[in-house]
Length: 128
Image (tube, rainbow, N blue to C red):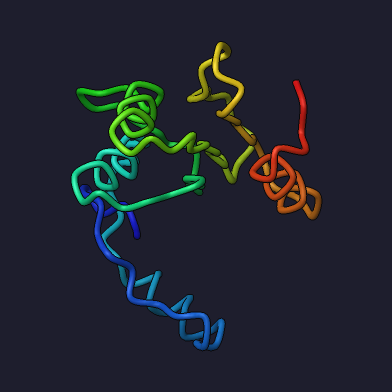
């Protein structure tokens, strides 16, 4: 899925070459990043999700629902203790995660350690 002023399907597959994926993604009319949209979409479509991972250029925007509220609504509706990880690909200041929710994580900047941190967090191996 991708942010293009709305939350839209991203037509890529694991079998595609990286250059083709880059070409596909580069052609998207990117827009604001409302980090609540993945949880709102999953709730509306009853899609089971263990973890929402959002990659953004750090230009996040909140719509009518804050992401932590959308995540809580999703958890209640689906009876899944889903997690939320928001990865700001540039090291600028932002915060999405609620400090009171151990199931949310903000990652600011991205290096070779980030995928392992995200994986460990989703598995429940990262503690406060």
